[in-house]
Amino acid sequence: MTKKRLTLIHASPLMIPVFNDLCRRLLPDIETVHMVDEGLLKDILREGCLTKPTARRLVGHILSAEQAGTDAILVTCSSLGKAAEIGRELATVPVIRVDEPMAKAAVQIGKRIGVIATLPSTLNPTAELIRRQGPSDIELTAKLCEGAFEAVLSGNPAMHDKIVSEGILELAGRVDVIVLAQASMARVVQTIPPERLTVPVLSSPQPAIEYLAGVLK
Image (cartoon, rainbow, N blue to C red):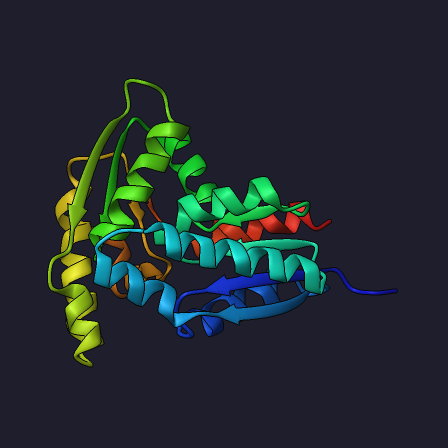
């Protein structure tokens, strides 16, 4: 019997081990294929937003993955969320943007939702997605962890984690739930003592793979 296939489209190769681990645990009978285009994120950083040429390139990757043969596609970069939704309209297999299941979970927890990101290009799309998922009276607090992304680029992941963890703790007293807008931020939660986390902190990788486990049954 041929295994079902999940294709993951990344804007950074650093996401491959994160999702490999989750897929091994949650999708043990599913074949996984990774597509990486680092230029997608570099273009967004250069332009400051998702542009039409970058969106077209992602849509091309989605359609290429479908043509190669796959049962579902996961776009793991939140900055590409709008382009992923365009690709979904054109594809005949499920196309999931990584932050969708997380956003749906967040609005079920409470109305006061904090969103944290290290890039404006990710903060705004995730915040917009949550507004679409939630009730009209949702209270959204967005926080940009300035300097964290630059710390990673300069080879100082410890500083990145420190800035992000401080942002999480600063928001914790003002919201019902905190959403991490980037999949790369998920590991930071493990560095914070559990007793200091007074509200749930959601990251996108695990909810996305759990959702796909249902899709690919």
